[in-house]
Length: 214
Ligand code: AP5
Image (cartoon, rainbow, N blue to C red; front, side, top):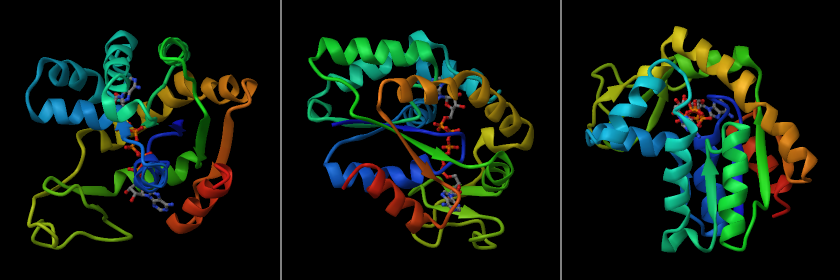
């Protein structure tokens, strides 16, 4: 089972991913998380990706495609994968199809979470995360403790570099220009499942379950 999780920055891809991957028993592969992990470890890939991520631009296709192709060849991904944030361009979608065809499989579903830009800006600008366990907070909806430490693990609570207002604006522009054409691309192939992402998290999850016919 190969599922693509598509949607603008802040649509809730990461929030919904764990439950979907768990239901199918497949690994959750987030290209954004892979780049951030590489950056944390100071690898050349992480340092290269940072240049683009900090500007809210896309990392060049050739870097991303190779990375995902290698990951899909790993043992745990042979039974399937949930791709979060990949593909993000038509070039990446073509490369993914070719890679999967070479392995005798294809995309089963492209799940698109729809949320308006105004809501996304509020979600992302207020997002805070724990460096230790990854727990999420929001300055308005679930404020982090005043001491700046995570209540679960005492890790430092921080704001992602690309969650500044100027960068969010560019991430949304890049999404509309370069990624949203994939909605029609997957619809034409009969693979698109659309879910309203502007609802309480449990309602979105129920929509995802329905859209995937679970
Ligand atoms: P990536 O890490 O993929 O970031 P993104 O797509 O911008 O998405 P986010 O992680 O910000 O949001 P999300 O949709 O996962 O939402 P979340 O669940 O966190 O990519 C980062 C960068 O890496 C890119 O800009 C690019 O530079 C590079 N990159 C990555 N992949 C690439 C590729 N394939 N090609 C080229 N470059 C690539 O939720 C957001 C917030 O909203 C959270 O605070 C959450 O609690 C809250 N929230 C979620 N759902 C709800 C809800 N239903 N109601 C209220 N609040 C909600």
